[in-house]
Image 1: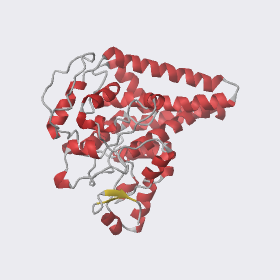
Image 2: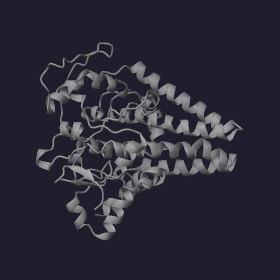
Image 3: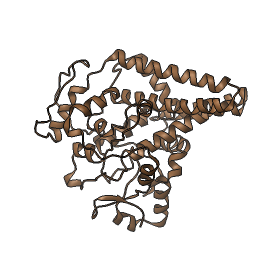
Image 4: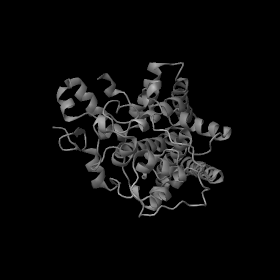
Length: 365
């Protein structure tokens, strides 16, 4: 059980387990402007048929994708300038927090690029977004491997720690050694999420991947070197306050926000885990991935990631088409929900173990 202390994002799945989502036949997706429609009178589709139906929404508008990328990069640049140059500290603080949320939006674009959902085959996008992944300590190699595994094995107890937070059943918890229980508690502790910059990204994703193979995960070494060097240079040249508001605080806000979103997407009161013999890819997407409705500002800042059940059903749908997909397909309109309201956050953070008898997540005994 030593894996319990390792971030999900630091482990390498075997080749046989990678990209294991069910294949679908080639589909000629209509143009983005040609919105597919689905009648609510149609029979409810399941499994492969449901995944196949989502292919209608995978068509990318390349100009739209570039527009989203350029706008968020410009916004981050402006926010960083305000955080660096303003003499009014509340303004610097506000700019740093907004910058952190903008980094979350840019992460969604990076995340979609790694899925092949947008800017496919663009060398310029690969250069920009790979550099971004290294800067935020989510280097392309380990991120893609573990995140693909997560998508292909969502809601499975075995391997749940790869690309996500570990989950054990109540019976498994009873059999864990005290030291392994402690490790499990630490990984799922709210403070680990709040300060995710170090335990999840710096240690979990970069350091732990390097422990497996320095040559294979060379970009993890580059990510650590860049972060530590940039922090040192900013402090040396401009002082700690400027380094804090322009670099450290935005990353802390981004990693805390992203860490909680990732947690709540698969740890929420209505989620269900299927027994191994009953598990299917589509059921896992719809029953074990949450829908998180948000206001327009937070929905924009988080890049529609609240439509997570739709994203898990087909990760090649560009993020800006996820609401459209949910609106058009009646099978996607009754997901398990959570929100960013304090009470809902509290409820999600209390969920620690899967109880097969009650068929729900529960707290520690």
